[in-house]
Image 1 (spheres, one colour):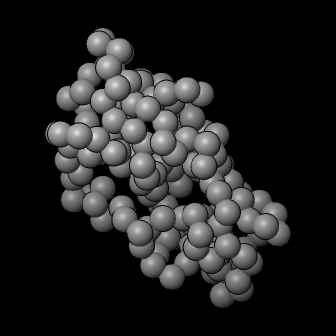
Image 2 (cartoon, one colour; image 1 turned 120 degrees about the vertical axis):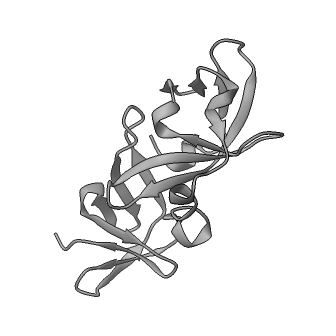
Image 3 (spheres, helix red, strand yellow; image 1 turned 180 degrees about the vertical axis):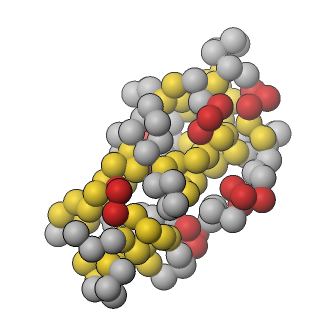
Length: 143
């Protein structure tokens, strides 16, 4: 699944069938090379859904057991969130300092949250190569 396909997806509570939020941003931990949380657009309550609290990330909705799973972001999540840590749109540099393009989109495994590929105009970069994400660039291991 791609970030662009999943952004805006509704978050639905399985016990009440109520919409409790909408996917706004993906919080990625580059060390784990995975999505660790979703930042949500929501009225009232928290704004963060931890990946571990997701029941399923389906083609039409993200499901959770209850609205209480949506919380205020913990400091560790806040440290990985925001514009400085977004992957899409950032230039991609190898650890050797070579610019290989900019991230157009990101593919991830909907079951585990693992980043599978960074999609660049010149070709895909395996998610396993991801080293870091900062305000200036995404850094990847050389091939």
